[in-house]
Image (cartoon, rainbow, N blue to C red; front, side, top):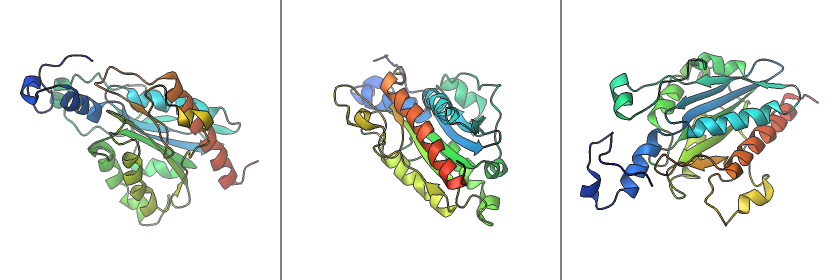
Length: 245
């Protein structure tokens, strides 16, 4: 585990905590990865929408994008949700610059996709503030129920195995419900990979996932395989709901 001197968010010294694993792992994971959504469309340009600080969820998003693209007739596009933190805060956190090749999405653009896959790191077992702020801005879609009936799925990143691999998705489902969206969990369709016991693995029946640890851990090959599978599986379900062969 990489050593830390002080937490960049709350300025607490590691030694004052007795050990550094819980606090600093949590701090890095709160902002690690991506708040990502993968709006995806059939027969039209599609988007994968995300917020990323250190890239954990972004990496999963790329694999999900590949999985979606592997299904004939389905296209996918990458998007970011707006950042809510100021540059000073991001600098203190050691966050790299945002990718300038990925456009920032507006809530109205969600209605153009035939399906949506949302991904984000966890904050106390729920989606973090950046993604919640974006969803709070979707009232104009909610009132006329413009997202109703669209298939939607979730993926996530947490700091440890018990850090929210199920609760982060479970608490996010409320956003889908209020918009009338059709939740498409990955279930156990990934097969034997869902029952892996010999290595640390993120993901759950709710969706693919990774475990960021102290921020230095990257998604494993198995986690990336599940992400690819989720994208491919979701695209197939969405095509059926769309009535495409």
